[in-house]
Length: 325
Image (cartoon, rainbow, N blue to C red; front, side, top):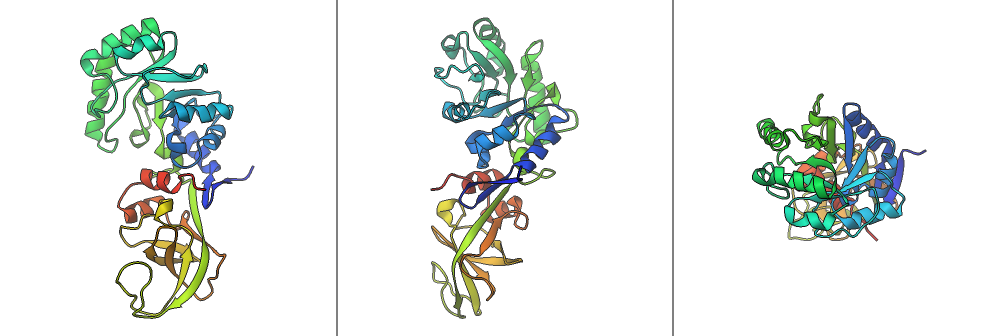
């Protein structure tokens, strides 16, 4: 089986890297693989199938994301992270999130997971309502787990506070529990379950990047010192060959930010201007129309590109990995 699959134009996902990352996590605990937002732009169906023998279950954001997985024959448990008012799916492997007593009656007899708020203040029952929600949900639904979410997995003191609060809110609970995310992975995972997304795709240190983005050179030209390149009033300082590539800010390659580079014909070359549908980058006289340049991959890392965009790897993946026609 080849290591890479072409998902969309210019977007390549190395499923071997995804599997290696998942295996690294699952060596120490059970893994709930987060494949929402089209697996962070990497392709949710292909990712789910690649992890069918590694991940214990999957997590997505919405019912619509589940429908795509079910249609593709994914039969592992799928947790819907966003609370729904009413269930619309009947598949036995679908698990709905409950966050308040109001919604329990609508999910009578259905598989559910209980979300608790330990400080992020997005979804979840607060501490004073946790015990009641757990008790009522257990009587009326098929509760599979209780979980929460870190608001800053890089802040160890914040993580410990949330762990302490989660333990207090679920003390005596006989249900599986999970709160650990990619950024909080340690040798000993609390409760033996990790719910991970960004680590699967190599977006944090210690894991293998899985996405490669390439663009095609549409044409090249010589531009002389003092001439304009792309939008704006600025001019270049010296003569340069310029390649016009078929990726722009309409494809998620941000127009604004710090200096950045593409990998062209074996060299890192400076990006000169970003337009809506194309980007202009310096090149050598040997570069010609039809050549392929690396936008992100083995030579331009996700973290480097994220810094140049002024954002993080999450946004880089989901922006560049968005489906394009």
